[in-house]
Length: 297
Image: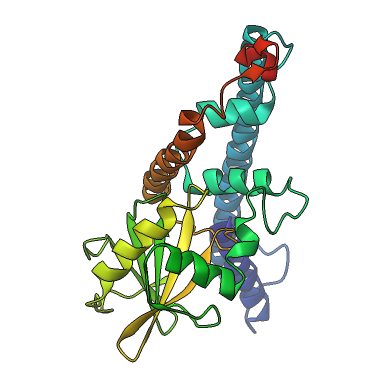
């Protein structure tokens, strides 16, 4: 569409330029006049422009029809799955979650919706949001895992570890408004975040391994499948600048990396559920016995 607008402007400028010429012929001049080829060229541009506009309109209409077809297919799936669960229609979000491809953004948004149902949405259903915005409680959590590094929640992180319940597939290094993403082993992952300025010249710090190991321990004991753990270097020592569990800033990655991190999110979510599962907290039990999963949907 932008290309078409530029063409329209050029055509308009060309037409105005022809009318401003001192020797331009009057309207209705014969076919042999000097200005005729210029007018013919402008008409050709306009015809091309109209053709492109018609093509774009056709593409928009086709996309609209495809969207309606996908919505109809989704409704059909809702009805099929609903019938399997004794309902007329299964809720849309359940269908999308069980039939979609892994996505970090989709997974993180899902957790946001879940914790928004808490009486205190900031704290979340597990209270983690309140704990990790309080310096004293954050430091107590760190110390409970035998770690002695400093905690300063007001410091700006120079590195952010994207952690998934004990796994750290992505580390974000920051410098002067630029970023470099590396693996836990320090490998440059390239320009995988279109919205940020990629800086391949940012050096991998010597303390990378230290913060990766610490982030794995810290994230493994938080009841969220995905957290961002910030670190700040001060006088050669690493300081924890925050554990973000509310994720106001969800990274927008390339499609490949959104899916990769989506798989990490799903595995982290599964690990998060293992402890209550082993304790029997996920059993479908009532005082009078058990009931089927279908009755809870």
